[in-house]
Length: 40
Image 1: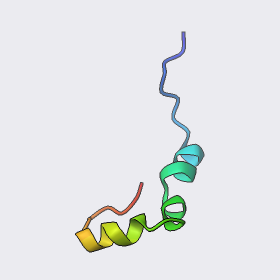
Image 2 (image 1 turned 180 degrees about the horizontal axis):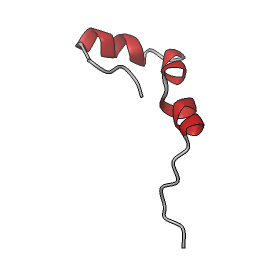
Image 3 (image 1 turned 45 degrees about the vertical axis):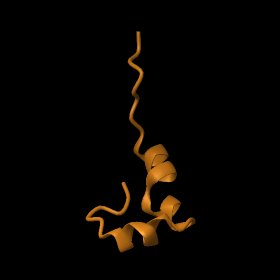
Image 4 (image 1 turned 120 degrees about the horizontal axis):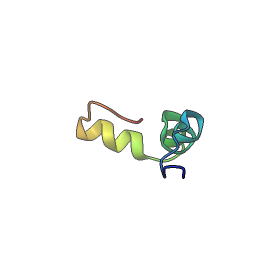
């Protein structure tokens, strides 16, 4: 039986990576808040 989490880096970065976040306004708001890490 396979486990539920089968990590896939390409899929992860497509969904949560920098370029995925760049499309919306999320990065700027996180910068304003002073986040150390902006995206995965």
